[in-house]
Length: 173
Image (cartoon, rainbow, N blue to C red; front, top):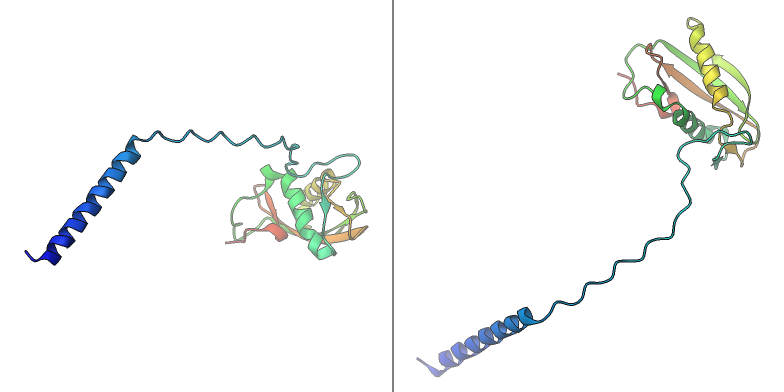
């Protein structure tokens, strides 16, 4: 065997032996002590879940800067208070009633009036129920940046008595 080959063999053997000894020594070493658990975060105040109607106003304040932007806050407020009455999924192709309602609010979010732009006249019970639902939801999130205002939404009413608002609808088949 040439000397170059013997040297390479010897170097390779020495490297393998060194690696084996290092691995053996690492295995014999004690494991480092476990890190202490992180400190518990400070107790956070309870979060407000959904809209909270109260005598002096809603627990929420709207950041909307115009009536159209406020629609999302108003619809979310109504959905939160009527979760069991919201139609889940896509609405059927034929709805029992469709109505467009303007809701007039003061600066604290209290309902001051309702105006039908398009009432479902063939279903007076739906008109009455929508008006009851809106009045019961008062106060809405306070329109702090707008003040006294009027916003409009369309109610999509299924024959089951459940509804969706156009602002948050999941569509229709």
